[in-house]
Length: 133
Image 1 (cartoon, rainbow, N blue to C red):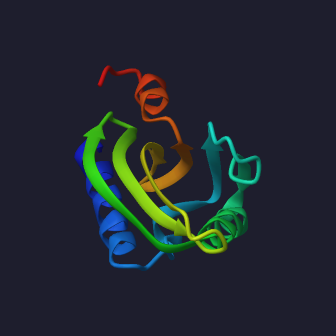
Image 2 (cartoon, rainbow, N blue to C red):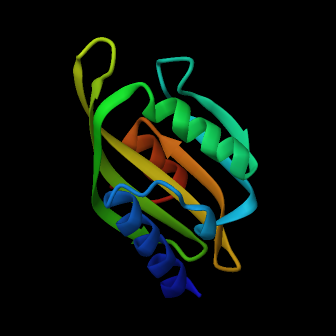
């Protein structure tokens, strides 16, 4: 199942990299989405279900212009996949540019993502995954 999980995540990220943020077919309807470690209080939190994931995504993307991310590495951890990525964007109101190395830890069950943990601090994501960078 492990390579299958990695392939599912790759397909989802290919779609996201092409600008399609609709990932419903890849996630469990009862998904838990968590953003961890943000200094901005509106960016941290926990959302439940597809509606919660959509809400969190829309609210986050509305803050930015020219939002981009680049996957640097995907690490197969069996029922989890760790994604190391670089995120860049420009603040919609401020015009300030930002670039940050982040980590995402996805937990899969029966071919669907059931937990999506987004870490602002990449080393924290690596630690949560139980590996060393």
